[in-house]
Length: 475
Image 1 (cartoon, rainbow, N blue to C red):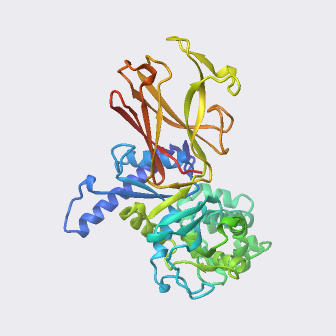
Image 2: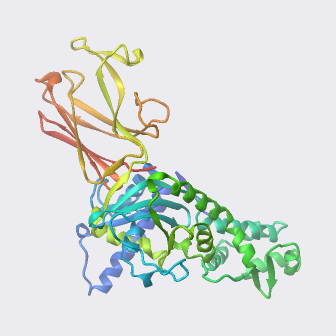
Image 3: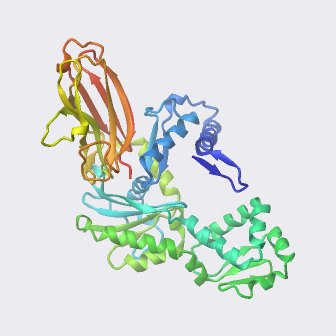
């Protein structure tokens, strides 16, 4: 995948992500060194935690691990020195231990978040790109159980920025805005940064955006700048500033707010989460009073709405808690059905004749490409629990076995090549000793990890084993 810069140049996404991570890594290590009397950290002593949206796909999470490897955070893809944390979970951990004063006072009530077994709550993680909506229940020992698979979409704060730039394009017509975007990207960046601070303002008042020199200059080439605002609804020219009315500002949020409220309602109406008491608003976008007002208006009659003082910092701080104790997340809901490709004795009553194969060794008739379900969609999966399976080779003289893992959004499937099936990964185990023929045993151990699963495949006869890490609880 390639990413396009504002100047039109292209770079591989992996380069952009890994270089960003490399910069953060070096910055962190230098900061630690300066703050700890020149102590140099041994790479093996560090566990890195990277947070990702809960709605990200398996491929996206695997991509982050690959970017971290490229950036030098870890030496191999199965390193335990990198934890991929889901942002709503990290935020939950932080909010769970905050005192009452740690939440914004404009909440519908002065309530502290109650960290006791049986408490259910919905986390609405409002980022720049995505909105992530997850439901958690606090277990005995204060661990977390996920009750509903992550929902959400690309309705974050960036959508408000897009609506703002569309509005500016309407105001500065005659090609003025497009010329400005093309010729002065750095200045535009400053303007958008200024807007992003204003959109997360805590006051219910008009917003003033500084109109930078080059935008004024490009506009003045066409006509007096005040003329651009004659037809503008919700914006006024004020001595070098663009004043945007509070009503207009609210309208820029409509798309995001409508989607957040609609998706939250759908989840909250499900019977299995009828006991939800709290709505936790986290993420930088949750700092916006416009967003919080809308959520309160929609839900405050029935739920306690809480937003931590540092809505943006909650995720990073929670990620630190998660790195210290990753086992604090006890179980998750599987977002898909996962399984492994197998072969078994051919049964004419149930198997497709196109999948019929005959062994050259002894004429044994078997069916290939069968899907063996390991975990079903919406099933609760206990973290770090090891599931054990036993298999046998299909050919008496085969010297290796390949395990291929698949997933689907269906409840189950018969074959791995059905529509909607996606191959996630595979590993090949050597089976050099063929004396026992088909009676040889292959053991498959699957550890349902935090954001990935690890499969270890072992040939019992030769004791040879291979491991593969696959993103598992992904949408």
